[in-house]
Image (cartoon, rainbow, N blue to C red; front, side, top):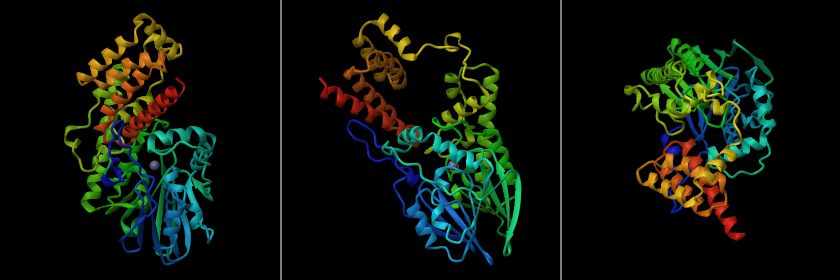
Length: 416
Ligand SMILES: [Zn+2]
């Protein structure tokens, strides 16, 4: 995933432009090494390796139309498809490559992931709308070709003159499978690195990811001293010194931030303080391998915290809480005046505290969800927070909720 794919649409008067990386279906093709080919879409890519006895394909892209275009480029019989993990942008195009009945290899846990996606289809449509700036409608779940062979641990096979060493791991997902091809001095590591972006360890909508195991797995990759690192499904290629530097930067930032979270958990620091206290090491802040255009450090902190820590934040008021709405209603009853809350929120905004203003305004919006003035102010706050935010996941969230408020205001006016 590179920076040019992560540019937002231009801002509007009453909102901010979102970032859409799912709307491009024309892959870019490259042949970075002899016998190695890659096809890249903004969100993910795939790669294939020619051998004297056929082709091994790694990942199958998100879009079946793009997959057809890749199929048109592959010469030789596809003998084997390997899924680096079960995220939909890596497994959705497989149908296009099944003509010669290849073996489809994946981690033992990958089919469970596909089952979960089917089970949670409506929820996943909703969160995709927030995360990816796409309309929320009842998309039928895309039927993914299931693996014909699954395994856990290490597995090696040869095809023609090349060896394929496969290793399962827990990192971005629990169903990672990365590949080492010693004859090419190359590793294909899926999303263990997402190009030049800060690792996608914390996603606000998704289950926790495996930070410590992730660092250890990258250390295992580094120990092979690969000349070529192919990531993001295979389409992003780091070579030589750059490969080593990308591995070093990712490992160090994960280890450092993970250890800070652990230390703060042991100090019983509250999570809302922790997300501001944990820092990227100074010398890595401007690393060309850790740009924060996809994920961001606060999400990382939440993620590691959730992995080690229960929901309870050690405030007795939060062990068995009443519904939030009920509590906000009581607080609002004491304040008793919408104008007072709006005035204070505007004051906080003018002092450069839009997040604090947003949380205060929430008392009013929860108590009086049809207060148009409050909704308009919230749009303004979200715009202020969002317009300087370059991170795809948070920027698209601000964008999504501005549009939700816009819709609510429109329907309230219609009913007036
Ligand atoms: Zn992924």
